[in-house]
Image 1: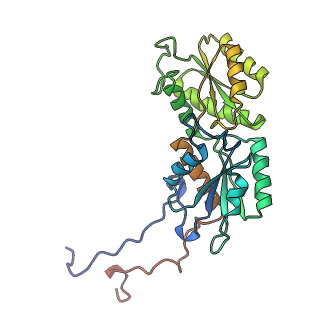
Image 2 (image 1 turned 180 degrees about the vertical axis):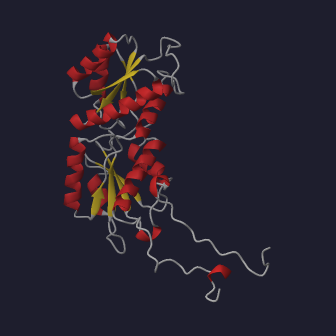
Image 3 (image 1 turned 90 degrees about the vertical axis):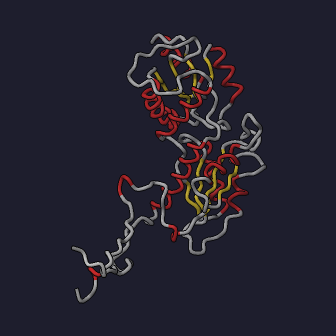
Length: 305
């Protein structure tokens, strides 16, 4: 029988760690360096079909995950809204270990964008860290799936293990995941292609969208495998694509061209994850020492008990 005059001991809050810890979390006391998104291309190239800035829309999407962080964007080319401008207005240090974190808005290693970001950071003299791009990442396959489904090229739900039979002549029976940015981009597109194939249940192959010969070869592989309605899915936000040239190539190859990824909430989540990874890599997830923990209270912990 419990004594009513004794209160149960207070349970101390526990920090979640390991594989189930929220990957977006980091210690609030650590401070919040600014998050700067490096948008490929010029401000004019980085406008979506509605004429809105992809960088500005991505900033709004990332802000939903990191509302306490100052978020800016700048373009790697041109004279308007440049990355150099975004870096030049960073607040210096204080209690923060960094002035900012730069997240390139590319879905794979991109040689030209990486070089432009390195130049802008060096010229600014700011104390910043540059993250990896948005890919490869499992959520990229989901975004590509959504874009293909919006165009009516694939089913919106997963095919899983059922027999794959196209419902009509608009459904794709083969997909090319197109990478942009060099050899590393094709490797990242290969990872996304495997994940997308598991979602769709059709053959998915990677290709370099900037190499016309390679793209023709991959499309030929799909046709040799029996594909009659292949579609190209660009694994890129859009500004880094030479769209007119790509449309001409796909028309010659007689294949459909899917829409670029554009600004998307899942891409915003990946950007927020990249930001958190930098902060966590600086050691902010170290467990507190015994001296830092508050003293336990309650009847079980009375000195005379």
